[in-house]
Length: 60
Image 1 (cartoon, rainbow, N blue to C red):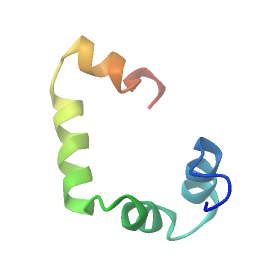
Image 2 (image 1 turned 30 degrees about the horizontal axis):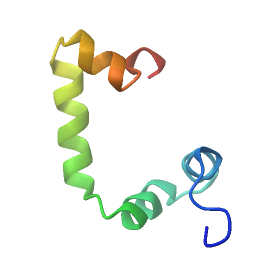
Image 3 (image 1 turned 180 degrees about the vertical axis):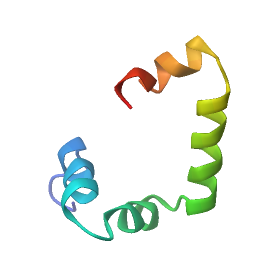
């Protein structure tokens, strides 16, 4: 990460391949697990097309 930065591929690999990948990403970004769950719940419940487009919800 120091030499190449954080790339999309690193995020995808951590989530797909590593057992604790999500925990590692949350630690790297400083984002709390509870905050992530709240954000996902709001996005799922809110029928907001602009928000869904911004977060690429159709790819979930």
